[in-house]
Amino acid sequence: MESSSPSPFPSITGRERLLTALAHREPDRIPLDLGSTQVTGIHVIAYQKLRQALGLPSVKPQPYDSIQGLAVPDEDLIARLGVDVRGMNPLNSHNWKVIETEIQDEKSGELYWSYHDEWGITHRKPRPDGLYFSLWQAPLEKPELTSQDIIKHAWPRMDDPQRIAGLREKAEAYRAAGYAVVLKDPFAGIFEMAQRIVGMENLLMMMASDAALAGVLFDKLTELKLEFWDMALPRLGDVVDVISHADDYGTQVSQIISPRMFRQQIKPRWQAVFDQMRTLAPHVRRFFHSCGNVRPLIPDFIEIGVEILNPVHIRATGMEPAALKRDFGDVLSFWGGAVDTQGVLPYGTPQEVRDDVKRNIEALAPGGGYVFNTVHNIQADVPVENIIAMYETLLGHTL
Image (cartoon, rainbow, N blue to C red; front, side, top):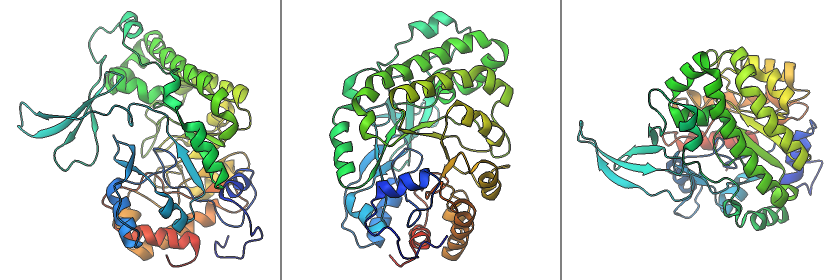
């Protein structure tokens, strides 16, 4: 698929381009996303370098996700690159009331920024030059956890309309400007968020030895998701094109939990969420992010209602782009996987980036069903010439 071929749709908008691709037809060119979600974005440092390289004025980036250090792309950059998608991020623990306090580690003496969020989770970031926050303390990470501990935890209120204040007006403006609109889930996935609440080791042991207790936690998180969407979709569903969810199950080689454990303990909860999506906003496309090798779980994702898979983790076992397109391209669209963000993008040459992009486009784009984005967020250390080489390969012209 040649990205530089003349457009058969001279007046096509970004939204039309995206919806054409998601309908498994080839638009005039591959639709492009940058920064519409917390897994398709760019670190503020890389963003500033890219703006400078493109001759755009210096700005203080608006934060999209303070924990990951991601920027909201500005309109001048979006226009320069031809980005087709705009994201909307409800108020959540990564972008709302992020109050940093300076602390000193008692053992090492090192300085950190610390942040205690609405879930009771403590994050910290090295000071002064840390790039992102890491989880430091989970609120229910303790021995002899009980169901009452889970039930009585100070859970945030997810049905508060304040979380989506102003988003309808934003969505209407994006639609008027010709962009597709993506609305992000208000918090991490059921499995991933449970890890943040009780600690990863504790959760995995609980799932293996006390599935009923793990189920109390999973049910609570599912309830909170349902509460949010019951509040948000009647207000926003008609101006949104895609809803993104994220829950990581894959490692570089296999899965964090067995497919059997996923099907028994996690899948039914996600089924409830996706059933609600289809009831409240049946036209909205359902995007699901899960890093690593999730090849054995893809049929399950499709069964619960996933329409868009992100990322295409091209370096993970079982995630070869051509094979995924062959086996699932008739029912799934692929969002991402344009270039390897672990090796090629940060450490390769511009020519190696171009070659990788071409290979992945050739595998994923024919017949539609593909949206251009990296495997994961563009990190701070990526050479700007590699970022530009990636976009120039897609667009077929010099930036």
